[in-house]
Amino acid sequence: GASLPDLILRRCRHVVEENARVLDAANAMEAGDAEGLGALMDASHESLRVDYEVSGAELDALVEAAREIPGTLGARMTGAGFGGCTVNLVREKDVERFCVGIKERFMRSTGLKAVVYRV
Image 1 (tube, one colour):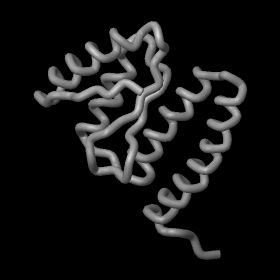
Image 2 (spheres, one colour; image 1 turned 45 degrees about the vertical axis):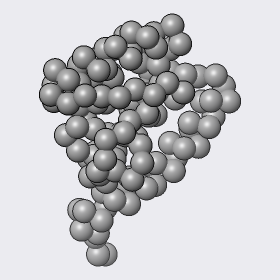
Image 3 (cartoon, rainbow, N blue to C red; image 1 turned 45 degrees about the horizontal axis):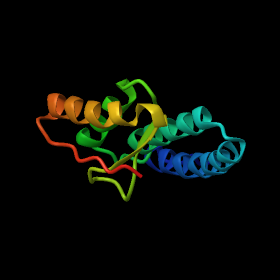
């Protein structure tokens, strides 16, 4: 049979796997599994970056910086892509350290200023 071109295959894979991640994320939240939810966020970002190709250097730098900070359970871009916003799941006791650390790491890696909104 005919096979899909690689680009279409990757886009389809992202959509199918992202839908499964959404269901798994709902289950993780219901179970109080913050670590599991964080791992799903990380996987989502990687899929958006590799398969859907809607991330960018600054978004990837934010996610990488977040993942280096102790207490960060997950990080991913949010929105339609090609912008500069991430959502990060951080243990409550580590939020202050995260807010300072993400700004320092992002400035060091990109020369750009990060703005943090605590939710």
